[in-house]
Image (tube, rainbow, N blue to C red):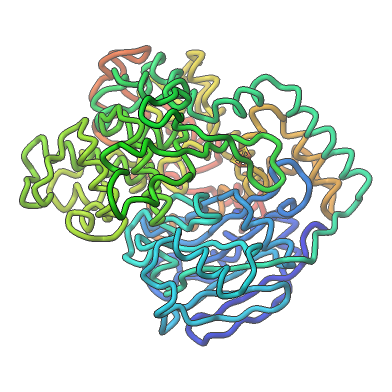
Length: 611
Ligand code: SF4
């Protein structure tokens, strides 16, 4: 138990919804969520198929612990071939949608084909149907889509995952949004949903989730929750969210600034936790309204924010919606909408983040793409003719806000911005200015002062990512280069297992893998130990790798931009250094049991049950 043992197969081409038994042999080998859904992806699609073609498969998958009382057990993952990366994509989100899908009795929903007309999927427990979205919610933002569906079905408790106009317009970094401001954010999974003419999945669930050993599970939950309750790191995360990281990366010199030209930003004082809680003169309120928590979460790291109503981006007729409360800046969005574009205006960054919520865009990729456009503009490669007269200079809050609206709606220069930085820089003949790995924009860490993070970006199966590996502590404490490959490889494996269980990554700042093993072992059928979780994660990692190789990627894709490999950091703890990827990568391949050209050896695949 903990799995329901059933999935919903939605054939969008035929317009049918069919119940199917979950492959429980695969569930024992790949857990759920990221791992199990990727197994279905690998089995059901040609890896070479275009990400935006009907041949791509789009899977919404819960984990075995999703919908239970396990702390943070509300996560789901969208798995597909990414529109941004052309690689295996798995984008994880919190909020309440994942828990509701599980409570409705489904382990996953597999969407295949392409609907001839825009539709949305409505699920109420066992009942599932596709409903016409044309003339109803197609063409609408996420903020308009969710209330419209709830009103039509006269049920305010429905939980919804949808795309905004960015997904409809096939913006390459479009997200799937749920609960208005939670996002399955990375790799362009929202563009895949748009390409299938699937606007939303609306779900209402009342069935509950059964665990294997309820007494043992209750004890494991109590222990895990207590560990979080008393821990100072957890308390800090509740108080400041992830935003306090901006002070750490600024001090260390790993804060990507102005398209990674610099690694420290002079304006962090206007963007950090203190700025967020500072009471404004204009309306007597602060940017931060309160913290919020996802389903079953006892941490509550989310920020709920409200803009200054007198800020240029929020004031005036027709802009009332930006004066309401929405999901606010977290570290990654604060970095990408702040230092990366040279902007130190917390209200402008909040506005751009709100528009990303409203129209479903990944703020990391959006901000980094604007940064690339700013460098292209400052170098004279693009001009006012392309930007519609907007001066794309680093530090321009006006350009950032305009860019958000145009990228969200696919208008004006937003069409170019919607390409993402790799395609944008290639279009204008300067591919080296895209700060990406495998086509996906960097999160908020520079791979020169943080060598382990550089290796993690280069080897991540879904493109540059801060959640695939955990080199933070070692990087910040100046760990030796020789140990980086081991730390990155081992944490990639354990993180793959955690993602596949159905919980959030943040409790792992407090827990060890033994807490997760206790929860899974009590909740699910089978004997689950720390070793088995690590091996499962390694199996998932190699399966994703093989998908990417079969899609046409090679070891040449395990790389970083010229700037990170050849241009030394100008300041901070990494001053004078480049990322020494050439040294770390062969060590990493060796530890993985891969050949010198990055292919899993036959004995590695056999050991993991993949050959
Ligand atoms: S720690 Fe934050 S992101 Fe994770 S489940 Fe809790 S509120 Fe959501």
